[in-house]
Image 1 (cartoon, rainbow, N blue to C red):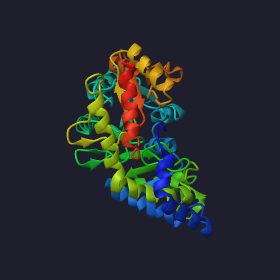
Image 2: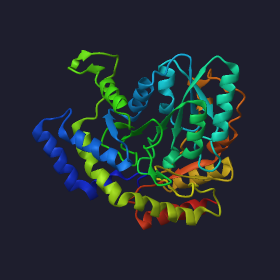
Image 3: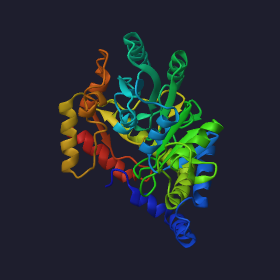
Image 4: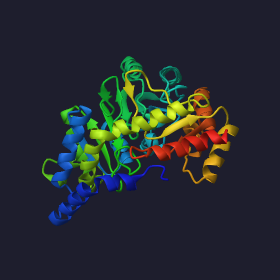
Length: 375
């Protein structure tokens, strides 16, 4: 059994993927081929944004977003305490300060109340300038954007949506990647929409911002091309081969994979809701379940389940074992007295189970039976 079965997905899409890859090989348009533009147009249309700029990976997408807004020394960037380091890594790289916020106890996304407390603490101290909020749709579950948007507007903050795990999910009728001034996603192979290597994308509606974004992605190129450098940029482009692979995968996601993921989640929810805390999704919203995480009643129970699953050779993971504030790299970031109670509790009890849209009913039953056996 696979935790995320990319082999099963490839088998289902093999004919289309192989044909697209062969076409790229025959054209020799390995960088900037027509498949890249086609993908960008389809991605933008799917999420409801005016512009999509693809890049080399999801971390680059976030770094470029930071660069677009000039985030740097003296700036405070607010981020949930439960995420992968790439959400705030660019902050550290560019000289800004990461200010972590506790998560909500149900969605595990950034807590609006904790966010506002941390903003007020930064303002009261007076050493840093509140600049941006990175809202992470953790595990594929969208944030409470009504509340977060209101806070960003109140304090005049840039909202960056980190949708690395949530491409395909939606919040109250709007697709993830459509929130904030700018949004980013990742096409890492294990993501809901993954390529066969690294890849990422940046979404926005502002024409001028999109033009600068394309410039930054190619060494700060100017109107006359890549030898007309008008700003400091990076080298971050999505290869044509990866775009060609993503095109049939995007179609499959739209046609059936979102629904198929929900069916697996529904089966898990029905089986586990009595003994575990199962994923909560805000009414009117849809998670893409990049990971399916349950919370055991305590760490001992979680570890007992992990041991039993491992013994039966059923893959399992912990997303994430350590909150950001406790990572050695962020030990000097200011906490302003925030306790991170929900984040610590989440890390102590969380466990993720196999989840993908090609999971058979038999495999689902095997996982369910093994988890319940462990109790």
